[in-house]
Length: 235
Image (cartoon, rainbow, N blue to C red):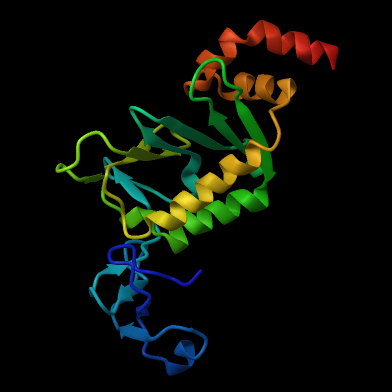
């Protein structure tokens, strides 16, 4: 996937190199280079769009009450999309303890539908973080995308949760960021892979033990807890 500007979607991107005018550094970079003599920091952008002229690519992803959050502080990603008439797809992605695995949960549209859980390894978690923050640059996205001229339609949100319990939420209603399609494609890939096999009761019970009080999955699981435990004991 070619690098694109998170503001306009252009592929006409230049790298920013801070504190150097060394042309040998530029030889290792596939993109055009802009040299800036001022030393860079975590707040400094690393890319510039040559079409809209916006700079982006900061290492930090969020600041709340003076605290700076970095990609390593992320422990949860929540994605929801849908509408009043068609229901919602709800996806919760959690980093397991010790970065050992990525646990993806897909919530059912109604209480009688199955709940899906699938585990991936650390490699997939790292790939997701790289895509979100180094390819899509969601740290540059606005907090809200709203087309007030359309009623109902499609609503979505993306929530990034941090290890200290704080979170950042990006909301949209019938309007989308420039790199939306890449984000949507990745999350619907997870949903498609989960639907190939219904979750094992032991995996659902493990998720409930770890995270059941942290999201809406706990409601569904508590309503099915007797059935899940019976199936798990039978296995």
